Image (cartoon, rainbow over the protein chains, first blue to last red):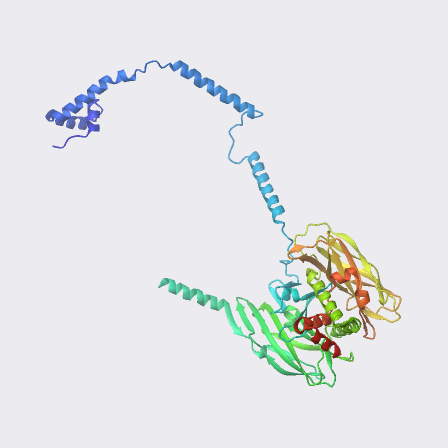
Length: 189
Length: 377
């Protein structure tokens, strides 16, 4: 014989099952002494519940008064730290928040600039021709086109670089392969 | 399997966009004038490569030439003009050999290391053209087309070489080998202690993008040499932070001979007083001859920006001195050693090409080799 579980028996004892479930459970309980005893114990427990609801020596009025006092204290403390009325509920993006956000961002950028001390780029991204020293050589650049005379195999400290305001740059070094003083010059135009 | 296929596809695509090929001898055209005192004895291209990257072509040229002196005179200087597709790109340079002493029948080894980035579709003519621009002989005679003013450059180098050899011979005569040794060491120490400026030059406009500093006019101060044929009067440049624009100096010809070229040395100081050799301010090629007692202007419409080790060098003060004068007859004046024996110049002025060569001989081969080299002249 398959017995109904405790939940079904508990609901049956309080008359909370549906009509069909109640009829089927009643048929089983009528034939099964163990389930009948179970239902009887649930009914007895329900009968005793009003006694557990009685909580002796609890002053509900006193607890309510204490809660009201705590709420007033919290509101008074909030007014002390704010210099005005309590802010009204605001949307996610309002002017005040935007100002604060920009101020924070500005501070971050300025701090970054001061700490990093970025150097002005000596290489313009423009396509205007320029001459400059590069690693192991001097080079004319115009946009993505370049022309360089190199001094491979020579330490940079051993190279004397010369500049003419006319628009040329030169390098003078001892060529380790030829053993000769070599002067290279690149023209901006 | 798919991984292998993908790898093959990626490498194939890379091969399409970066094709590497050797540069042949035919890609370089070498022009020697008919009356040239030099003959080509050998050309090697070494590991010269051309690498195609998309629409661009990257050329890495390592060329060696052997030129023989076929004249009856000793050669003291050679200048070569190196041009890469001049019309299209404007890539122009020179490789110059001053302080030579090449006797008749002797060879001059030449090395040209060049890098070129250009559009790959430009394919007319040779990739590189090397022209002989001029040869200076021991007697200061010059042969060559002189398209790059090589005569003046080589003559000035030769004048400095004679000046410095005479100086070191004098030191040797007066103070012996120890004195010469001390003199060489002093020069090498000075050179090692001087910081070189990194300079960027543009023909016009501002060299640095986004420069926000206020531009102001700064006047030149001058170091004057008593025997200089040219005297600077006043000068100025537009300064903005580490940039100097449009330098201009007014000069007067104090000599009795007409002058056709003047070059001023240019020293800048940063706010902490540190001085650097910034460069030179030459008169423009198109300048007319400056007669005796007349004034003229050295003016260049360029912008120079200065930095050291990546940090900008803000220009606080500027100083100028006459570093080279060419007379109308082709003779060249350079400052003498007494003129250069100046506290400021000793700190910032680099050694001449000849002093650089002699110091290299001393460093590699010792004092005996240096004395032997001085006695060759």
